[in-house]
Amino acid sequence: MSIKPEEWRRASKSGKVSVTLKAVVVTPTYNEAENLPMMVDAVKALGIEGLQLLVVDDNSPDKTGEIADQLARRYPDFFAGVIHRPRKMGLGTAYIAGFRYCLELGADYIIQMDTDLSHPPGTLPVLLEMIKEYDVVAGSRYIKGGRLGDTWGLGRRLLSAGGNLYARLFTGLPMKDVTGGFRCFRRVALASIDLEAVRSTGFAFQIEIAYACHKNGCSIKEVPIVFNDRAHGRSKMSLDIVWEAFWTVWRVRTRY
Image (cartoon, rainbow, N blue to C red):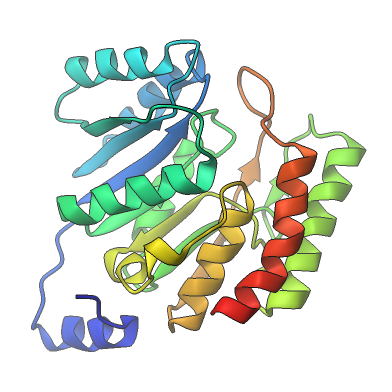
């Protein structure tokens, strides 16, 4: 059974529920064999008590899933688990699988984070500090102090900024960066969403989840990040993903 975020906040303030720091970083992988060990080392080096990692791998041809298993055996206390899926099924469904796993695990805080180190691991402590006051804390490229990395070309910058502005205008979301994927959720924020109803599979997933949280009354806070290019490998952005994001903006307004 799910409860609304405002009900959880009232119960928390009254002392009827206790919250302990049990946070899980969910990172979907597809051909991230070079990046995953680097990401694990970077996050683990932060020494955040209670923080664990969950890898959701889509049967990567480069054996990322096997590498994840090896790392999990090496760091059993750091890994919450490794989910192996039979094929490439999309970013959105990977996160949904990860969210369900974390909710069943009893995680208090659930974090979305890319494996390719485009999301700065050093911002994790900031997200976990701010999540004490808000239901959703998002890393933002478009608030003061945030920006895109220096290696981004003009075309990518225009596509990112234009798509983000379009999504903001038509959803009315109280965020500057509605397409970013570096976010921390209180358990109650995700538990208030009907995850079965989420249909977005690509990067449009970020818009849909943010909109669902907003419509459910979640408080949202943005913190600045520098969004760098991936450490290794090629971007998974495609025209199909852009097209899905375009239509998702209209679909989520009707559904939610």
